[in-house]
Image 1 (tube, rainbow, N blue to C red):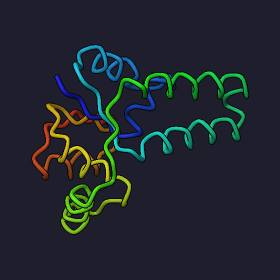
Image 2: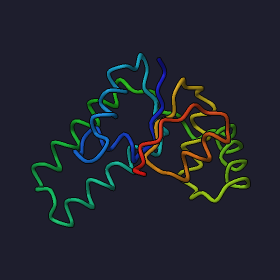
Image 3: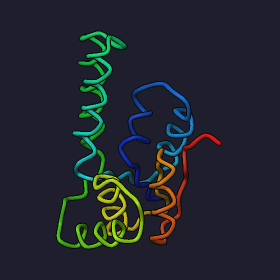
Length: 140
């Protein structure tokens, strides 16, 4: 199974919070995992925010970053191509999205996953509208 994760969903692989177990289950089920090329920077930004807020230590930050980049060696990273931008802009024109959220959807549309996993309600709805099979990690 080909599974595409948005940044906020994949970050749950490293930061234990609601839906972490679901993310780990999808990772185990996946034959291939993909992320948008922007995902690594977004996930590291989340780690940095946790460090600045004192929610993790410098040692924990280093461990999280090392684990992320170790895993990235086995993950497909989707480049920001004209085709990805085309699909991203179509989603932006059709839905109230942030630019980065649209890039995740456009990347997934080009990569053609079996499942798109998102931790954002608006992004999940927009991805469904783009024809992706979505697993939405959002609370009711």
